[in-house]
Length: 386
Image (cartoon, rainbow, N blue to C red; front, side, top):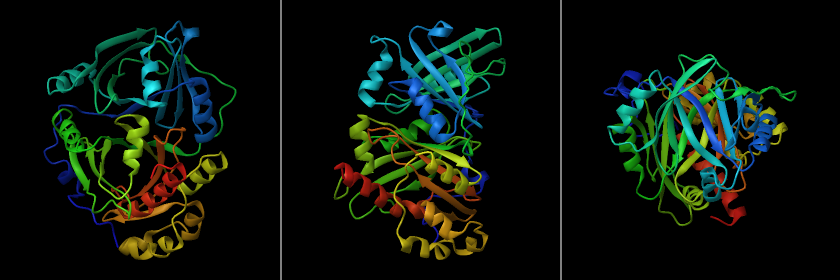
């Protein structure tokens, strides 16, 4: 059966009917992690995920407070930042949360207007509009807080021709492994606390002009032991999508509760990155040591043709190949999608990545939720946190 999704209107003109244009967003600019050792983290993302050296800021560039390594693959830029002394406030974030996402930066045409429009609608300011200059031009950045200690920074770079941002230099390295086929960020998921989802849905609606175009409740997202609720927020042009998860009552502890316990608060749960060839991408990632959640059972793959319904004849990939790699399949009215989830990429069971290939589908794999969460529960059981 095709995914049973409520509150879905798939025509773009319907999905974004009434979406406000006071905050036009051009795309995701970068994602910044606060980490304990940025040099080593950068090596991991290069070696394991196929990112390339891109830009650097630190002692050699005159910054004595922190070091930042920027790695890039196609349109994805990840900034890995570590403090250079014990007094840095970045330490507080790392001590509390472990390595995690601090900044989800959004590319805009006017960072000053973006800050003004969001703060006057109730956003708490993180960074007032600031002009940063070097010999390559200028960038304007501003920022607001969202759930937990996570922030959105608005980046206006139309007058800049440098490598990344003023203060950074090009990072040239002899070691640049081949990319794995990751293209861009499809969506980013945030976990919030009990009874907080509607508060943050309203924040994205009122403060940022987003719309809620998909909703899943605990009747749809549950297993024998645990449950959660989720709402997907999107901006007007559909380039930025932020699903928001909240735990729900179950017999045992859900993955969202586990995250909140170990991250010690709300934060970014996972980053979904798109590929045009998920079989090749996942094969390369597995060969480089990336660990994925366990493969769904045999009956899951036997049921795939029936679940795809009218899209079953469109499936280009061999089901046995997908099963061998643990890749899941789902469909909606527009087409099908292929997806797989890594295990957490740090020792705390917090942040993980999703690899996704869309073949027309605009959904988020609702038909895979049960198989996915049962796989996550098997990992929770190993960790003693179920």
